[in-house]
Length: 513
Image (cartoon, rainbow, N blue to C red):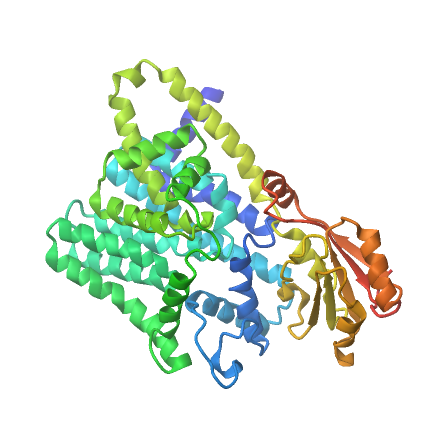
């Protein structure tokens, strides 16, 4: 009975594999949309969500817009399309009367979950074009259920959001075989241009695709691809900058200038750093097979070369953050997995070691499923979000952020507080005159709250603040989530600590206890 049911399920999957893969991929992404709150990195919140919501509320959190910069406005080097789309969405939410930030973020994550399905579907199509239906389905299944994909797919990371257009570009370039039809070249170029509008560095992927067309002696198609690439860049990037700054490509010019001038300011990692990242996220030793397959055979050139060009540029550029390479992870996997399966099935050595490969897959899927479940329900940066939600709607006008332990206080996500005009006093030196610093806060910005970052020497720090400002009233403590605690345990650089909140004086905060 069980065997017949299993065979029937397999038959239904084989009859409509793309629909099954889409459904399988959707489940953990929807789970992550509802249960994986917070934000992953500073950029995916403060450069997107805070900016967009502040514009809706008539504020400019990052001072990006020239009319808020004073006498000498200057571009800050940010691509405006992605935060601009969030501005339109939050504007729609405001029109509909939706103010709850947590609910709005669930909707944002659901939209990102749907957008990310494009990568799974096109990844399957690319694998099917290059291999057998069985290999393509297994490749699609990995893309659907890789442990990190649902968690990252619902985040506001431009590295992930620019991924689907590049997948569509890749599919269109090989859809017709060795020589793409002109209409598909045009569409591929436009999707590549859309990716550039979202994230400038994808221009290196587009450059690799153009170079591949030239190497294949498709001169005319290479020229058309370049023209099509420019269409969304001119319409969106140049158009928006022309409206805001009165000249095209103002933000793009500043973006390039800033990154070149600060190539080693943040991180300066060795050239092989991203190979280590790829070797880790695909779960070794399975990941070694993927990398072997990717570098073994540079075909199809129209997909392999742009993927390699993107990897090559990021490998030689000093500033390397792990998330930067996420944009090409599905393509590296599909190309590597397809070639590995071709190599493995033709290898007499592997033919005699079927059990070894089965064991590698069992280990890979077993660990992957455990991590998939854990990540899909992980609340990232929980303590910072919950600290602001705890104070939302309570008339807070000032925050005193006390971090004399590590002297590196985190930015507070004011999107969840709902007050862009809150005064923030930062105390990192135990010898600083707290009373004098607090006296600089205008009276109309009070009542105020003290945020104690971390639990080390907490009572001593509380006493120091009370000596300066009078009795404090405990409000609550926001604790970090399991993911943040795990990351901190693995690498203490990932600082995630409890945030204790105290009202500056009794009665200052309605509902305090």
